Image (tube, rainbow, N blue to C red; front, side, top):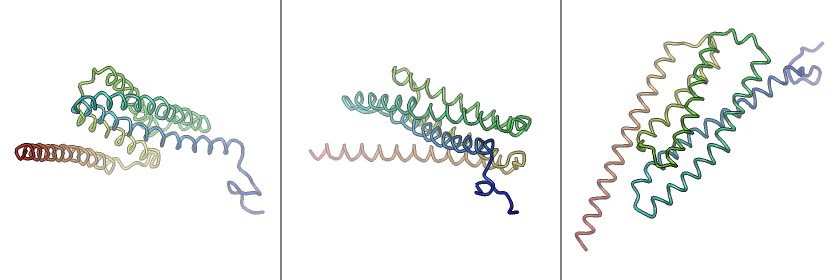
Length: 210
């Protein structure tokens, strides 16, 4: 008799197994949507904060546009992505409840909890920006935008390696990521300052010629 394998016509997967695959598929879809929304949302915060440097009426127009984009992104894409991710994760755990005894899962859930806090904190920041109460600069928002990258790396590594995650290598990877992201933010800030200084000099030269 031929060996039974998943998705074989001779031995199709059980309803229980199919439920696991459906939960996992939509869990992954939810993760992609959720993180895409978070990354783009905080990038909009950067532009929103930097709109204060623009002259009127561009300043008001840009801030209203970013406010609208942030609300739609948060409410229509990012939050539904979060809900799907969490709901499907609960479904996955329900198919193998014994996994709740695993130490690696407890650590993973801790990082997921941090990600949830980050999500709701972004919602709070969004409201402050809309009310004109946020004191954060564009550069500070750029730093905030890197936080989910660290969480994503740790969560994925835990999901793949489970209890066999190499702690030393993972620690060095996270440290390297933090250093690289901090350096890139500083380099970008320096580049923007140089570009602004060059633009100012060009404007002064043009004014002198006139």
